Amino acid sequence: MEILKKPLLTEKVAQLTEKLNRFVFKVDHRANKIQIKAAVEEMYGVTVVAVNTMKYAGKLKSRNTKAGIVTGRIATYKKAVITLKDGESIDFYNTL
Image (spheres, one colour):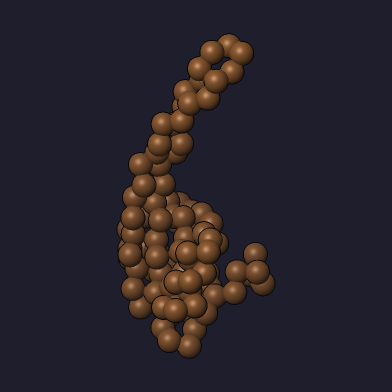
């Protein structure tokens, strides 16, 4: 099971990283906090202090087309906020 899907890089996450040394990832919806912690420590070689997870339900979306209204759903996902030990950091741009 691939636990870490991708890092989330938004303005809000950048503020969390600067102030609180936290990084955010989209993760597999079946993964628990222990598995997420182990995956981050193995992949980036850092010490994880805390893991917080959130599940987001998929939203309904609709749009008008020539054939009529098309409705669909955005996929559900799980997000993990990782707090690292002071002085440690993850550089996404060099590790991609």
